[in-house]
Length: 191
Image (tube, rainbow, N blue to C red):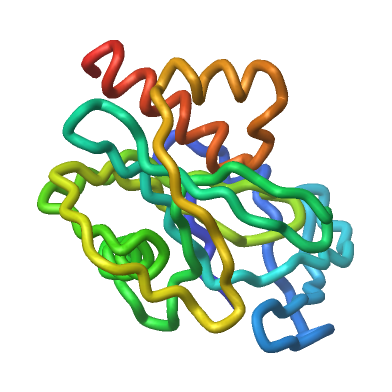
């Protein structure tokens, strides 16, 4: 049985407790778990969710105040997306180590100043995926080392441009929407 983790203010009588579980699907990147859980009223239900190794999102801020962005094609939506550099955490990899690796691989940049901002969960009822968001400053340009299947374009944007693109629907990627508002808070409001 999995250990139940509750915050100090949580009511443990409202928690769902895992009774049993099985792997319903195992792919090269994602897995689907099928668990039987006991509800607070003692009834049992089946919960299916996608297991994901987690990922990092990097908000790379250049010295002139612009932000390093990526433009890339995203299947299965068949659209070009404006995104922050990001990537999947490898098994047993520290999130900051992953962030540094992904920034270098995707953009060719390294950073001298890193700040953890927050962790988000995009689809809490359907996945255990979490995204750790980092601010990267003190950027030094190098050469990108893209993965074999990766094709992307890097460019810079101002924070007001990003916020306008979010408000007009040009940016719809969840990590980039949230990261844009974090940049507004951290940089513009000097949080």
